[in-house]
Image (tube, rainbow over all chains, first blue to last red; front, side, top):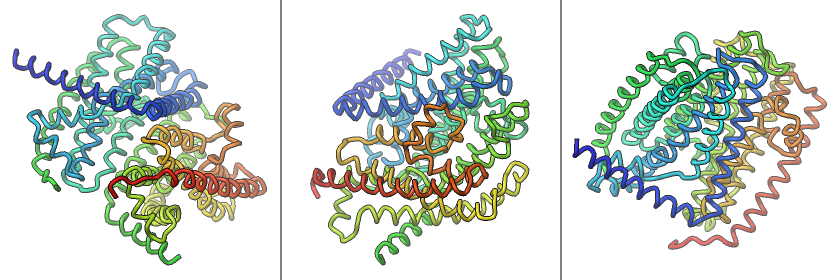
Length: 268
Length: 264
């Protein structure tokens, strides 16, 4: 236990260093950083306008009222923002590192390569997604006709962490494709699509599509399930399923990484 | 011109060689398309409508924007931006080729192959989802629609080429790229028909060239714009092409004077 705690402390310290490095790198070019923040802001604004145009004119869609749909939108922004701040950028860089041979510098360090690659880039501009996401969630939660409790909030946070773990696992799986394919730029498309699809309540799907988006590509657990747990009485089957799916996909992604990294041969 | 045909040929070969990227784009776009079809179908099945669009019109609209996005997209910005930022541009400056034409040729080569791949997929989807898909509104609509896609391609190319070469003035262009990609996609009608937007956004869009990328061609395809209005639209779009050419030339002129390729 003490050993694990020490490893966790070390991991957090490394992430902290990476965070500071990224902050320094970003603030070295303040105009570029400001433009990136504005870019994220414009994107977020259009997503909210889109949601308003489509859902704002109806009482409910697929059993979700307008406020709940905006909580889904806010939740996906949280997952998206946290993904960029913690791991998405770093794992995106893996392909380039493998192509150019700079992944060597990661492999030779006395730290787990997956962890180091994961935290190697922190996209600070995406913090603005967290701010807008939180605003959407809180403002709409206060409007809905449901007396939520601390248990709802706690379960929501756990569901969101599960969603983040599921998304992380898929980013790892898609990133490891570069160990097999020389040009695997398409992996970014795959993961970005996950995020795009996560914006919509997955209850719109029926039949085979519902099964696929729940268990094969478990998009439902990114934002729809957390929203249900927060804005409705807690469904413990959903809580359990979400946790199981997160564990299964995390273990599988780790196994694939271990297999993939054995395929890596430096170009330099 | 011969050298640019060679670049088109090389681009075709390159796209054929690395099919993985293209097929992931197609598959992911199919997933997005499927989600929208489910969303629209669900909304309409609950007895609701989005503006004055029927379910068939909404599905057809989004099917065509998905089709367009597979060969008219913003990908070239990253390539151009990286070439300028990393000094690769020098390789082209010392050769007797025009950098803009070189990029246009590369994008044309990609578009040719992408269209060749997408068309059969689209035909199969169109057949399978025929109950949700509308045929062109009139006898000339399909021909004019395809013709106007050339203008869409050119407008899109000039916008994202200009953003790519704006790296001359910026150290990192991802912010600018992101802003424009979002604005062009949204105000071009890639996500939702423009006439569903709030009035102030529609009015703002009238002063921009983006609506000619997706919204105008598709509206004509759906029979929502008369031939006369469409012809006027094409003339305005052609005018925008001229303006965008001048803007890209200005950015190039200002940026090339600042360009330095260290260590090359």
